[in-house]
Picture 1 (tube, helix red, strand yellow):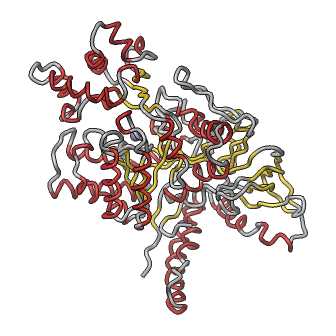
Picture 2 (tube, helix red, strand yellow; picture 1 turned 30 degrees about the vertical axis):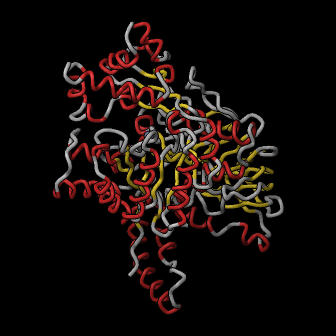
Picture 3 (cartoon, protein in one colour; picture 1 turned 90 degrees about the horizontal axis):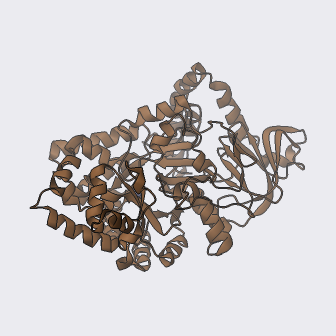
Length: 582
Ligand SMILES: [Zn+2]
């Protein structure tokens, strides 16, 4: 359990705060510990009372009482229990893969309210349940946690707020606001989700791009002292409103114009509030290793855990550098820096056509300025030359598949084919598409060997980076199981589950999720090893995954017999900073 954070909804926060705050560091003397416990207990009680009153006022007290009591009725006392105990949901005889990385074992799992209250032999312990699921022959595992999604819009959308694309992969918690692009108002967004309901739990990051854009606009300006202070205040506010950390996309304009020192200053603010630093790095191609070094420096100087989003070696020029990339991260970890990464199991990435080809200097001032430069005869030749280099670096015009465009006739075609139709060079055709509006692109630029090498590392979590038109949004987690656990046998099932759940919870400091453990939130999945698989392809990117028989979110059944029930059981999770010790 992590000392600096607590979660999430009002009813549990008071209780956990009290619990976590009285844990003293082991190095203290007994007297010091006692004093600390007494001091903290007093402040915790002081905090608990108003929280409990608020909970009562909003009719949450019964649930709070329920969850508190459930924590103490676990199988730990099993041998003394001789009366029938009641739970809401019981999963019987499943192959339990609990997220710890330990070997599977056969066990029953009981849920009461929103918590896991029992793991063991239900018949022996005389547990009875309102609802029973026979999990014989099925895997029971913690719900997956996706640390990099683009669900900000989905979760706020009336039709898509159920987050079915993720539920059907077994994902019960998504992080969004990655790549530096987040909600303008973290607190209001979380509140909106609470009010309207969402299908999975959701976590927000404060976006550096959003913050920098607000203070400096789409320019390449460097902040003065007052502007830097304003950005720091915005990070602090986002963290206070519940963000779990700071995200950057230093590859993208206008974040690309920032110097490392600026990012370090903002990261220090997130670090002081227990947040993490999540980054789409400045480069994933020619500058990959330098970008990792920069990320590690940010971790070291801001004293913040750093998480590299969707780690990859982008483009034939840097293929096989995964070995050096891993080496750099391992060295940093050995030096005490909390460095990690996430990955999706596809050889194509997905971004905008503009971001993939246009050099950043051409984007200074925003879209209007870019359009002027495209048509400026003084500038156009240099622009085209650099775009040709970038296209080569990605693997050429046949490596880019248009996934989204205001003009639907281009969707599903490769850039070389479009260029032929237009009777233009590929870069000239790309400029025409960019002039039409935002175009999404699937970019085939990775090497399978690099993907496999990254995947075997114990610090690499699973993330979808799900975006429109790319199958990763619908298939990342199930594909990792089907392809890399069962078909290729590259990684074991306990390893794949851990790196898709508990490791992510630890890395992002999400308390009481990611493991099947008594007292933890009941985010639980039940899947069939024989059938679990992704179905989404580059041609049909929105096919739901199969094989998840049951997906339980906060104790409620969101997927039943492989079908989404329509339940909105997710919670908007708010990071809360625990009381600082004396
Ligand atoms: Zn990204």
